[in-house]
Length: 360
Image 1 (tube, one colour):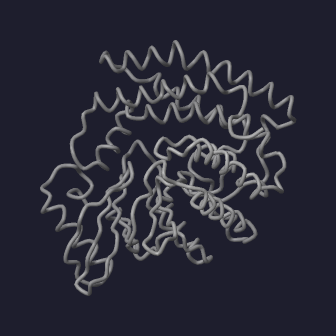
Image 2: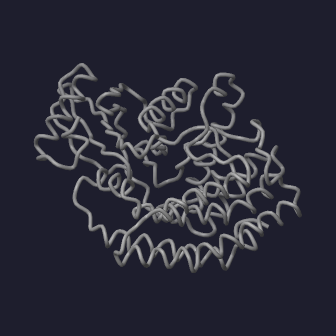
Image 3: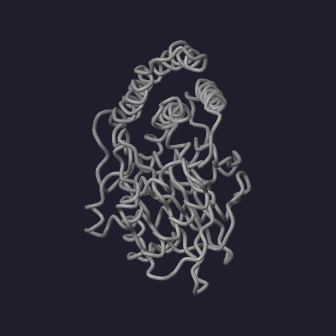
Protein backbone atom coordinates (compact mmCIF):
# COMPACT_ATOMS: atom_id res chain seq x y z
CA UNK A 1 0.00 0.00 0.00
CA UNK A 2 1.82 3.07 -1.22
CA UNK A 3 0.54 5.66 1.22
CA UNK A 4 1.76 3.67 4.23
CA UNK A 5 4.90 2.12 2.76
CA UNK A 6 6.17 5.28 1.05
CA UNK A 7 7.45 8.41 2.78
CA UNK A 8 5.41 10.59 0.42
CA UNK A 9 1.83 11.45 1.35
CA UNK A 10 -0.05 13.57 3.85
CA UNK A 11 -0.15 12.49 7.48
CA UNK A 12 -3.96 12.49 7.48
CA UNK A 13 -4.12 10.22 4.42
CA UNK A 14 -1.59 7.80 5.88
CA UNK A 15 -3.47 7.69 9.19
CA UNK A 16 -6.75 7.01 7.40
CA UNK A 17 -5.18 4.15 5.48
CA UNK A 18 -3.68 2.67 8.65
CA UNK A 19 -7.10 2.78 10.35
CA UNK A 20 -8.77 1.18 7.34
CA UNK A 21 -6.27 -1.68 7.06
CA UNK A 22 -6.33 -2.32 10.81
CA UNK A 23 -10.13 -2.28 10.94
CA UNK A 24 -10.28 -4.86 8.14
CA UNK A 25 -7.88 -7.10 10.04
CA UNK A 26 -9.53 -6.73 13.43
CA UNK A 27 -13.12 -6.77 12.22
CA UNK A 28 -13.98 -3.73 14.35
CA UNK A 29 -13.82 0.03 13.68
CA UNK A 30 -10.50 1.73 14.47
CA UNK A 31 -11.06 5.31 15.56
CA UNK A 32 -7.43 6.50 15.81
CA UNK A 33 -3.88 5.55 14.80
CA UNK A 34 -0.88 7.30 16.28
CA UNK A 35 2.70 6.86 15.14
CA UNK A 36 4.93 5.49 17.90
CA UNK A 37 8.60 4.67 18.08
CA UNK A 38 9.48 1.73 15.89
CA UNK A 39 12.62 -0.07 14.83
CA UNK A 40 15.05 1.01 12.16
CA UNK A 41 13.14 -1.06 9.62
CA UNK A 42 9.43 -0.44 10.06
CA UNK A 43 6.62 1.92 11.00
CA UNK A 44 4.58 1.26 14.11
CA UNK A 45 1.21 2.73 15.12
CA UNK A 46 -0.82 2.48 18.30
CA UNK A 47 -4.49 1.85 17.52
CA UNK A 48 -7.60 2.68 19.50
CA UNK A 49 -10.82 0.89 18.61
CA UNK A 50 -14.38 2.02 19.24
CA UNK A 51 -14.70 -0.65 21.97
CA UNK A 52 -11.78 1.05 23.83
CA UNK A 53 -9.41 -1.84 23.05
CA UNK A 54 -5.88 -0.90 22.00
CA UNK A 55 -3.58 -2.67 19.57
CA UNK A 56 -0.35 -2.07 17.68
CA UNK A 57 -0.11 -2.10 13.88
CA UNK A 58 3.33 -2.72 12.41
CA UNK A 59 4.08 -2.03 8.74
CA UNK A 60 7.19 -3.82 7.53
CA UNK A 61 9.69 -2.32 5.12
CA UNK A 62 10.19 -4.22 1.87
CA UNK A 63 12.74 -3.57 -0.85
CA UNK A 64 13.87 -5.62 -3.88
CA UNK A 65 17.46 -5.48 -2.59
CA UNK A 66 16.47 -7.09 0.73
CA UNK A 67 14.99 -10.57 0.40
CA UNK A 68 14.26 -11.08 4.11
CA UNK A 69 10.59 -11.53 4.98
CA UNK A 70 10.54 -9.73 8.30
CA UNK A 71 6.77 -9.86 8.63
CA UNK A 72 6.61 -13.65 8.26
CA UNK A 73 9.59 -14.24 10.55
CA UNK A 74 8.22 -12.10 13.36
CA UNK A 75 4.54 -13.02 13.24
CA UNK A 76 5.22 -16.75 12.96
CA UNK A 77 7.85 -16.68 15.71
CA UNK A 78 5.54 -14.83 18.10
CA UNK A 79 2.75 -17.28 17.26
CA UNK A 80 5.00 -20.29 17.90
CA UNK A 81 6.40 -18.93 21.15
CA UNK A 82 2.99 -17.86 22.43
CA UNK A 83 1.70 -21.39 21.77
CA UNK A 84 4.60 -22.77 23.82
CA UNK A 85 3.75 -20.60 26.81
CA UNK A 86 6.43 -17.94 26.25
CA UNK A 87 4.53 -14.83 27.28
CA UNK A 88 7.28 -12.21 27.61
CA UNK A 89 6.39 -11.11 24.07
CA UNK A 90 3.44 -9.33 22.43
CA UNK A 91 0.50 -11.56 21.54
CA UNK A 92 0.10 -11.79 17.74
CA UNK A 93 -3.44 -10.93 16.63
CA UNK A 94 -3.78 -10.69 12.84
CA UNK A 95 -1.69 -10.38 9.69
CA UNK A 96 -2.12 -9.15 6.11
CA UNK A 97 0.86 -10.02 3.93
CA UNK A 98 -0.40 -7.99 0.96
CA UNK A 99 -0.40 -4.81 3.03
CA UNK A 100 2.82 -5.86 4.80
CA UNK A 101 1.02 -5.34 8.11
CA UNK A 102 0.64 -7.27 11.36
CA UNK A 103 -1.46 -6.47 14.43
CA UNK A 104 -0.22 -7.20 17.95
CA UNK A 105 -1.51 -6.59 21.44
CA UNK A 106 -0.74 -3.19 22.92
CA UNK A 107 1.65 -3.32 25.89
CA UNK A 108 1.13 -0.65 28.51
CA UNK A 109 4.64 0.30 29.57
CA UNK A 110 7.76 2.34 28.94
CA UNK A 111 11.01 1.90 27.08
CA UNK A 112 13.92 0.82 29.24
CA UNK A 113 16.33 3.75 29.45
CA UNK A 114 19.78 2.87 28.13
CA UNK A 115 22.20 2.26 30.97
CA UNK A 116 19.50 1.89 33.63
CA UNK A 117 19.25 -1.91 33.51
CA UNK A 118 20.21 -3.59 36.78
CA UNK A 119 20.86 -7.15 37.91
CA UNK A 120 17.15 -8.01 38.09
CA UNK A 121 16.68 -6.90 34.48
CA UNK A 122 19.73 -8.83 33.32
CA UNK A 123 18.44 -11.94 35.08
CA UNK A 124 15.08 -11.50 33.33
CA UNK A 125 16.86 -11.39 29.97
CA UNK A 126 18.98 -14.47 30.72
CA UNK A 127 15.92 -16.40 31.94
CA UNK A 128 14.12 -15.49 28.72
CA UNK A 129 16.96 -16.88 26.59
CA UNK A 130 17.13 -19.99 28.81
CA UNK A 131 13.42 -20.59 28.21
CA UNK A 132 14.00 -20.37 24.46
CA UNK A 133 16.86 -22.87 24.76
CA UNK A 134 14.53 -25.43 26.33
CA UNK A 135 12.36 -25.38 23.21
CA UNK A 136 14.98 -27.41 21.33
CA UNK A 137 13.36 -30.42 23.01
CA UNK A 138 10.21 -29.83 20.94
CA UNK A 139 10.44 -31.68 17.65
CA UNK A 140 8.52 -29.01 15.72
CA UNK A 141 11.07 -26.37 16.71
CA UNK A 142 13.61 -28.08 14.46
CA UNK A 143 11.58 -26.91 11.45
CA UNK A 144 12.31 -23.29 12.36
CA UNK A 145 14.99 -21.85 10.03
CA UNK A 146 18.26 -20.30 11.20
CA UNK A 147 18.16 -16.76 12.51
CA UNK A 148 19.07 -14.02 10.08
CA UNK A 149 22.82 -14.20 9.41
CA UNK A 150 23.28 -17.06 11.87
CA UNK A 151 26.87 -18.34 11.86
CA UNK A 152 27.52 -21.83 13.19
CA UNK A 153 31.26 -22.00 12.52
CA UNK A 154 34.17 -19.62 13.01
CA UNK A 155 34.75 -19.67 9.26
CA UNK A 156 31.12 -18.58 8.73
CA UNK A 157 31.56 -15.55 11.00
CA UNK A 158 34.60 -14.48 8.99
CA UNK A 159 32.74 -15.08 5.72
CA UNK A 160 29.88 -12.89 6.96
CA UNK A 161 32.26 -9.99 7.66
CA UNK A 162 33.93 -10.52 4.28
CA UNK A 163 30.54 -10.44 2.55
CA UNK A 164 29.62 -7.19 4.24
CA UNK A 165 33.00 -5.73 3.35
CA UNK A 166 32.52 -6.70 -0.30
CA UNK A 167 29.30 -4.67 -0.42
CA UNK A 168 31.23 -1.53 0.41
CA UNK A 169 33.87 -2.32 -2.21
CA UNK A 170 31.18 -2.07 -4.88
CA UNK A 171 30.11 1.45 -3.92
CA UNK A 172 31.11 4.20 -6.32
CA UNK A 173 30.93 7.82 -5.20
CA UNK A 174 33.14 10.90 -5.05
CA UNK A 175 31.28 12.36 -2.09
CA UNK A 176 33.51 13.26 0.89
CA UNK A 177 31.81 10.76 3.22
CA UNK A 178 32.54 7.93 0.81
CA UNK A 179 36.19 8.97 0.54
CA UNK A 180 36.43 8.89 4.33
CA UNK A 181 34.72 5.51 4.37
CA UNK A 182 37.19 4.15 1.80
CA UNK A 183 40.13 5.46 3.78
CA UNK A 184 38.89 3.80 6.99
CA UNK A 185 38.27 0.46 5.29
CA UNK A 186 41.58 0.35 3.41
CA UNK A 187 43.92 1.83 6.01
CA UNK A 188 42.38 0.54 9.25
CA UNK A 189 39.65 -2.07 8.95
CA UNK A 190 41.14 -4.43 6.35
CA UNK A 191 44.64 -4.68 7.91
CA UNK A 192 43.15 -5.38 11.34
CA UNK A 193 40.69 -7.88 9.87
CA UNK A 194 43.64 -9.78 8.37
CA UNK A 195 45.30 -9.84 11.78
CA UNK A 196 42.11 -11.10 13.42
CA UNK A 197 41.58 -13.88 10.89
CA UNK A 198 45.09 -15.23 11.55
CA UNK A 199 44.63 -14.80 15.31
CA UNK A 200 41.28 -16.65 15.23
CA UNK A 201 42.85 -19.66 13.51
CA UNK A 202 45.64 -19.72 16.06
CA UNK A 203 43.18 -19.46 18.97
CA UNK A 204 41.07 -22.29 17.57
CA UNK A 205 44.12 -24.51 17.23
CA UNK A 206 45.27 -23.70 20.78
CA UNK A 207 41.87 -24.14 22.45
CA UNK A 208 40.51 -27.02 20.40
CA UNK A 209 37.58 -24.99 19.07
CA UNK A 210 36.75 -26.17 15.52
CA UNK A 211 37.38 -23.51 12.88
CA UNK A 212 35.46 -25.08 9.99
CA UNK A 213 32.96 -27.45 11.64
CA UNK A 214 29.50 -26.16 12.55
CA UNK A 215 28.28 -26.52 16.11
CA UNK A 216 25.69 -29.31 16.45
CA UNK A 217 21.99 -28.64 16.98
CA UNK A 218 22.15 -29.40 20.69
CA UNK A 219 24.59 -26.50 21.14
CA UNK A 220 22.38 -24.02 19.27
CA UNK A 221 19.51 -22.00 20.66
CA UNK A 222 16.44 -20.22 19.37
CA UNK A 223 17.12 -16.51 19.44
CA UNK A 224 15.46 -13.21 18.49
CA UNK A 225 18.90 -12.37 17.03
CA UNK A 226 18.44 -8.63 17.69
CA UNK A 227 18.00 -9.23 21.42
CA UNK A 228 18.37 -6.72 24.23
CA UNK A 229 16.74 -4.02 26.32
CA UNK A 230 16.77 -1.69 23.32
CA UNK A 231 14.01 -3.95 21.95
CA UNK A 232 11.98 -4.23 25.13
CA UNK A 233 9.35 -2.50 27.22
CA UNK A 234 8.98 -2.43 30.97
CA UNK A 235 5.27 -3.18 31.28
CA UNK A 236 3.19 -1.42 33.91
CA UNK A 237 2.88 -4.72 35.80
CA UNK A 238 6.68 -4.84 36.16
CA UNK A 239 7.51 -7.58 33.65
CA UNK A 240 9.80 -7.02 30.68
CA UNK A 241 8.32 -7.64 27.23
CA UNK A 242 10.76 -8.28 24.39
CA UNK A 243 9.96 -6.93 20.92
CA UNK A 244 11.26 -7.12 17.35
CA UNK A 245 11.68 -10.79 16.43
CA UNK A 246 12.12 -10.11 12.70
CA UNK A 247 15.38 -12.10 12.60
CA UNK A 248 14.27 -14.95 14.90
CA UNK A 249 15.57 -18.50 14.43
CA UNK A 250 18.30 -20.94 15.41
CA UNK A 251 21.56 -19.29 16.35
CA UNK A 252 24.85 -19.72 18.13
CA UNK A 253 24.55 -18.66 21.81
CA UNK A 254 28.01 -17.09 21.47
CA UNK A 255 26.51 -14.72 18.90
CA UNK A 256 23.55 -14.00 21.20
CA UNK A 257 25.99 -13.03 23.96
CA UNK A 258 28.24 -10.95 21.70
CA UNK A 259 25.38 -9.01 20.10
CA UNK A 260 23.87 -8.28 23.53
CA UNK A 261 27.22 -6.81 24.60
CA UNK A 262 27.93 -4.86 21.41
CA UNK A 263 24.58 -3.28 20.57
CA UNK A 264 25.09 0.50 20.85
CA UNK A 265 21.57 1.12 22.16
CA UNK A 266 22.12 -1.18 25.14
CA UNK A 267 24.68 0.96 27.01
CA UNK A 268 25.03 -1.66 29.75
CA UNK A 269 27.55 -0.83 32.46
CA UNK A 270 30.73 -2.91 32.47
CA UNK A 271 29.73 -4.70 35.72
CA UNK A 272 26.34 -5.60 34.23
CA UNK A 273 28.03 -6.98 31.11
CA UNK A 274 30.15 -9.24 33.32
CA UNK A 275 27.03 -10.37 35.17
CA UNK A 276 25.23 -11.09 31.91
CA UNK A 277 28.11 -13.19 30.55
CA UNK A 278 28.48 -15.15 33.79
CA UNK A 279 24.78 -15.96 33.98
CA UNK A 280 24.53 -16.83 30.28
CA UNK A 281 27.45 -19.24 30.59
CA UNK A 282 25.71 -20.80 33.57
CA UNK A 283 22.44 -21.09 31.61
CA UNK A 284 24.38 -23.00 28.91
CA UNK A 285 26.66 -24.84 31.34
CA UNK A 286 26.17 -28.16 29.54
CA UNK A 287 28.06 -26.52 26.64
CA UNK A 288 31.44 -26.40 28.35
CA UNK A 289 33.21 -25.11 25.23
CA UNK A 290 31.01 -22.03 24.89
CA UNK A 291 33.43 -19.73 26.71
CA UNK A 292 36.35 -20.80 24.48
CA UNK A 293 34.23 -20.22 21.40
CA UNK A 294 32.99 -16.87 22.70
CA UNK A 295 36.53 -15.62 23.20
CA UNK A 296 37.31 -16.33 19.54
CA UNK A 297 34.15 -14.93 17.95
CA UNK A 298 33.76 -11.85 20.17
CA UNK A 299 36.20 -9.55 18.29
CA UNK A 300 35.00 -10.97 14.95
CA UNK A 301 31.43 -10.04 15.77
CA UNK A 302 32.80 -6.67 16.87
CA UNK A 303 34.06 -6.13 13.32
CA UNK A 304 30.65 -7.17 12.03
CA UNK A 305 29.14 -4.44 14.20
CA UNK A 306 31.55 -1.95 12.60
CA UNK A 307 30.03 -3.00 9.27
CA UNK A 308 26.49 -2.69 10.66
CA UNK A 309 27.21 0.87 11.75
CA UNK A 310 28.15 1.65 8.16
CA UNK A 311 24.96 0.26 6.60
CA UNK A 312 23.70 3.77 5.92
CA UNK A 313 26.32 4.07 3.19
CA UNK A 314 24.39 1.35 1.29
CA UNK A 315 21.58 3.16 -0.59
CA UNK A 316 18.91 0.49 0.03
CA UNK A 317 19.77 0.37 3.74
CA UNK A 318 19.54 4.13 4.04
CA UNK A 319 16.15 3.96 2.31
CA UNK A 320 14.98 1.48 4.96
CA UNK A 321 16.11 3.77 7.77
CA UNK A 322 14.40 6.78 6.15
CA UNK A 323 11.22 4.72 5.75
CA UNK A 324 11.21 3.83 9.45
CA UNK A 325 11.89 7.44 10.45
CA UNK A 326 8.95 8.66 8.38
CA UNK A 327 10.59 12.04 7.79
CA UNK A 328 13.59 13.36 5.85
CA UNK A 329 17.01 12.50 7.27
CA UNK A 330 20.24 14.44 6.86
CA UNK A 331 22.02 11.74 4.90
CA UNK A 332 25.51 13.23 5.21
CA UNK A 333 25.18 13.80 8.94
CA UNK A 334 23.83 10.31 9.54
CA UNK A 335 26.68 8.73 7.61
CA UNK A 336 29.28 10.87 9.35
CA UNK A 337 27.95 9.78 12.75
CA UNK A 338 27.86 6.10 11.78
CA UNK A 339 31.44 6.27 10.53
CA UNK A 340 32.45 7.79 13.87
CA UNK A 341 30.85 4.86 15.71
CA UNK A 342 32.63 2.35 13.50
CA UNK A 343 35.99 4.01 14.05
CA UNK A 344 35.51 4.06 17.83
CA UNK A 345 34.58 0.38 17.99
CA UNK A 346 37.48 -0.55 15.73
CA UNK A 347 39.90 1.23 18.06
CA UNK A 348 38.46 -0.51 21.12
CA UNK A 349 38.66 -3.93 19.47
CA UNK A 350 42.25 -3.36 18.42
CA UNK A 351 43.16 -2.60 22.04
CA UNK A 352 41.26 -5.48 23.66
CA UNK A 353 40.94 -8.42 21.23
CA UNK A 354 43.74 -10.46 22.82
CA UNK A 355 41.74 -10.93 26.03
CA UNK A 356 37.96 -11.28 26.31
CA UNK A 357 37.01 -8.44 28.69
CA UNK A 358 34.05 -10.01 30.51
CA UNK A 359 35.28 -13.39 31.76
CA UNK A 360 38.55 -15.07 32.68
